Length: 104
Image (cartoon, rainbow, N blue to C red; front, side, top):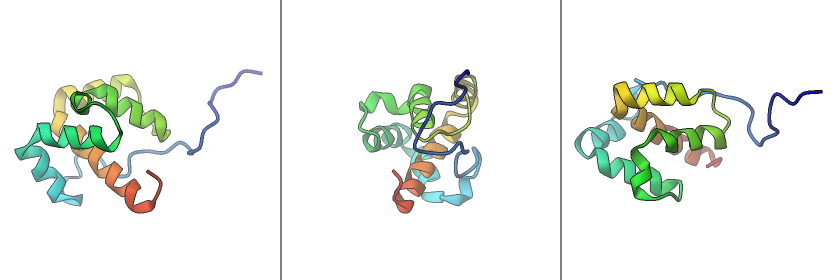
């Protein structure tokens, strides 16, 4: 018998907001727009990672793996390459929502 899914704490899911759902949290969008590096450091801090890791697709991949969010390294690469601001804001919105739900 082949194991196709690793046992985990979370059922497979998607990010809680879409990649371009800017209006869901205008504050995060403005924060990312005016201080992209600061938002990246905030995300890295939330995840107990190095501040320099906040702006890379690898942090998004680690986050997806931890919470069993559907996607792939290729999707992460494309999101960061073509709209890094969208990707970083989506990640921050998801972190904030999980904190509110008590599952972060």
